[in-house]
Image 1: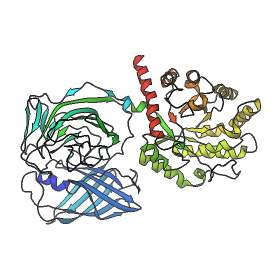
Image 2: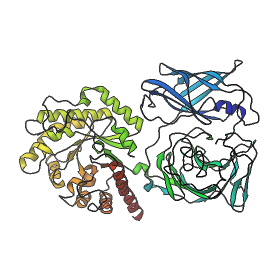
Image 3: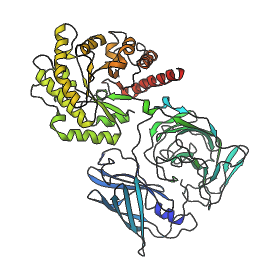
Image 4: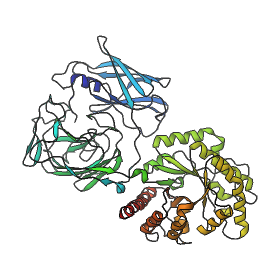
Length: 614
């Protein structure tokens, strides 16, 4: 599967490799956690390597990605979080031919690693006493899943003109070039018929580098044939026939060694297949013969044979020629010129996963495709609590480890906390007997906001404290807020008030307090749809008074399904010049957060179209 290297490059590659981003039961992998993490290594010779160090159940583990897959480090030890040692079984003898694999008996070679500021320096000694040393650079975490509806494409570029190899060059000029252009087809001719990774025949790459793009390309391999298409010179999309013995994570439609195709949509050997591939923000979508087999999935790390180790650099399209014969045609690349990801503010409320103040919600949000979350500040233990004990304190306020755990999970999964909801206030009559308890919960939630760097605390108003009717209830809320607001202002936290009846009722409360800058409305379209014209309210009050907009399935008013008109909602948000977060709020769990994220993303798409029209 892999390209050939020089003698030194291959020897180094066998000693260093880059690991996939961790998953499963792992901890202590955050970028701030000293030597643990993923490292890209660039050797003076130009070879590449990928190394991962992690903890699994508290035990250090490591892996080097080399030709043929990741190899576990032997006798790994981590010292003081800034040093490590391990052993690797490698061959160090001279290769049989230039660019071929090292020969000789496998030797157990000792390695020493040391963290020096932002560099990982590793040294090892070869038989005879020669010491080699190389440096690693920490690999950045994967971005959140992009919204493909917001992509903007540039002008398509034809990479193969059908008549010659203009725009292409050999990856390794020392290898034989079996590539030629004939009758509109880019062919690689080689007598090699096995799947071994070394060959005297070479690979081919574009002379231009690319970052994010859509690539359309046809391929044909003989029965039992094997090749690959490298995106940015980093990620190999597998090229084999449907009956290949490598079907699975190595099979047609797969990202080699990283992501399995969801189905085998390949054709028999000797038939033409068509790939339609979109790569953006290290996430890939693969359509094989009009069947989507990978759907906007993150690529955890480079595949073996990558041209360079850094995920953040552009790279060429390169085609494998060091395996069997293969043919390509109709190669068209369309660059992605904008993702509008900075303008996309779609978050999820923790209750969508049926959880409250639970650190595992960050992982749930990431898996569902969200890059931001609204967390719950906590409730007393137990189910169906009707009354909160007056002595109750939030765990966020009494256990410092809770906040630290949230910070770790937020960083690990790259999910930002945009607000805290003090949901336990729904159990309190804030202007009556529960005033002291409610004030304590509110202030503890604000303190947690400050610790987490969160700007908004949501104050729900259902249950005993809803101010639906009468002057007494709204006056009680106004009096409570008069006491709480100076504290929120001192912590630089905005209080977002839920509208329990109509927006006008909340605006009346704001007017009694002279519209304080640290008191806003969080607007729930699902709750208010039956009570008022939500499009009119958003247009009228959204720009001045809203801090968040919440969207959820609410009986028949499911987002995008009938009663709530997404086009009208998008137009109202645009008219209000609302630039805050759209927060999905529900409590069914399962696949609902994913399905409704896609619906909410349509709002952004519709707003983008409105801007183009304007």
